[in-house]
Image 1 (cartoon, helix red, strand yellow):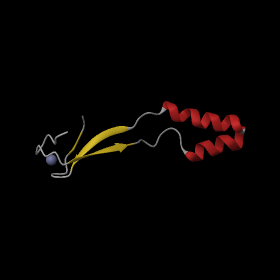
Image 2 (cartoon, helix red, strand yellow):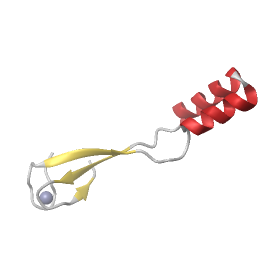
Image 3 (cartoon, rainbow, N blue to C red):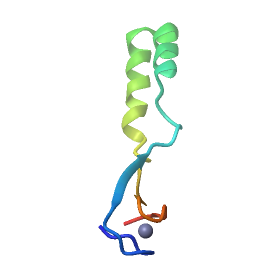
Length: 67
Ligand SMILES: [Zn+2]
């Protein structure tokens, strides 16, 4: 992978996960409200959220870019 700006190969991949969807607290709430089933529901939400975003940051010029 090369930086589109300066063509440096000194780039680093980053993963940005959006905060929506499953969180530990949600799972806990589910547990409190519905017991094991609620916890399962909390965990189910995890699979639905695949909004992880991959991007690259150039260590040379600081540019942020995508595949
Ligand atoms: Zn660059």
